[in-house]
Amino acid sequence: MNRFPVLHGIDDLRMESHPIPEVGPNEVLLRMSRVGLCGSDLAMVYRGMLGDLVIQTPMGIGHEASGVVAKCGSAVTHLKPGDRVTIEPGNCCGNCDFCKAGHYNNCVKDNFYTLPMPNPGCIAHYFKHRGDLCHKLPETVSQEEGALMEPFSVAIHACRRSKVTAGTTVLVCGAGPIGLLCLLAARAMGAKSILVTDVRPERLETASKMGADFTMLVGGADPQKEAKRIEEVMGCMPEVTLECTGVEVAFQTAIYATRACGVVVMVGLPAADLKLPLVRAGIREVDIIGVFRFLNCFPIAIDLVARGVVDVKPLITHRFKFEEFNKAFEFFRSGKDGAIKCMVICD
Ligand code: NAD
Ligand code: ZN
Image 1: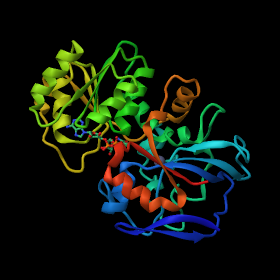
Image 2: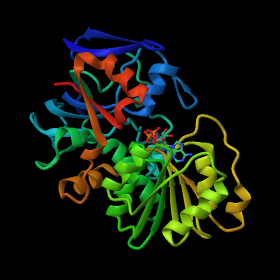
Image 3: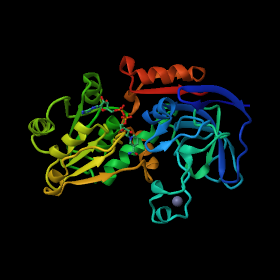
C-alpha cells in the first residue's frame, strides 16, 4: 500500500493508505525521498486556497520533491529503476497555444496542483509522475538538494526573464526561500552587486552567508526613503529588482528603487491587489514583469548545484520524519527557530 497525508479540509490533514498507483507508458513510479514545504502548501492547508484557486478536497499535498525511480512505463527510455530524480511539478497539455509557443508554464490545461484523489501529493511513499518531467540527479546532487530544484527553478526563471547577466546590479526584496534562491541565481548569472532586504534580521544574516554584497533591514518606513537608502548603500540604483515578498510596501519600494529603463520582477504573489506608484515606473520606462513558476529551468538548476556553482543547502533549517507531517506543517506555519525550509523525509 501507499501511505500519504490527505487534506480533507482546512487544517485537516490525515494519514491514509491507498493502493500503489499503476504507471502508464509515459510515466514513472517514484519512491519519494525528500519534500520541502512551501508557502503555497501552507495556504492550501490553512486557508483552503491558493491565489484565486479554491482547493477541492480531499487532495494530496507537497510539490518540492525528489525521489528514486521504482518503476518505468514501457515508453520511458531516459530513466531506469534506481535513478535518483527531482520532479518538475506540472502536467502541461502540449497542445494549447501556450504550450505550442513554448510557454508550457502558462498551459491552460495544466492540472498538477489541483489533481483530486486518489492522486497523492509528493509527500507520500510512492508518487507517479510523467517521465519527461522527472529530471535525473547527478552523483554530486543530494536528494535534499534535489527537492530544492523546484523553488530554485522559480528563481532562475525570474533572473532569465529579467536578463540578469554579468555586471547587472540587483535588488532582492525579501530573504525568504525564494528571495535567497534569487540571490543565488542572480550571482550564478554574473550579477555584479546584490542587495537583499528583509524585515527580519536573522533572514538577512542568512542572505549575507549566502553571498549578498549588501543587506538592509527595512520595514515601516516610507518606500521612497527606503529606495534612497538602497541607492546610497549600493552606490547606484539597481537595474533589476526581484520582488520576492508579495507585500505592498516592498513592491512600492521596488518601483522607486529601480533605475530608469530597469526591470521590476514580480516574483512575490500578493494575496490581494496592490496600490502601486505606476507613474513612477511608466515615466522612467521601468518594466514590471511577471513570472510564473519555471520554464526549462530544472536542467540549469541541477547543473549549477552539481558543479558547485551555488550552495542551496543553507536554506534547509529543519527536518521532519514522514509520520510527523502535521508537526512539520504546524512548525513551519509558526515561523519559529529561524525556519526557512523544512524538509519532510519520506524514506
Ligand atoms: P516567505 O514568506 O518565506 O518570504 C518572504 C520574505 O519577505 C520574508 O522573509 C519576510 O520577512 C520578507 N518581508 C516581508 N515584508 C517585507 C518588506 N516590507 N520588505 C522586505 N522584506 C519583507 O515566502 P517565500 O516562500 O520566500 O516566497 C516569496 C513569494 O514568492 C511569495 O509571495 C510566494 O507566493 C511567491 N512565489 C511565487 C512564485 C511564482 O511562480 N511567481 C513561485 C513560488 C513562490
Ligand atoms: Zn497546454
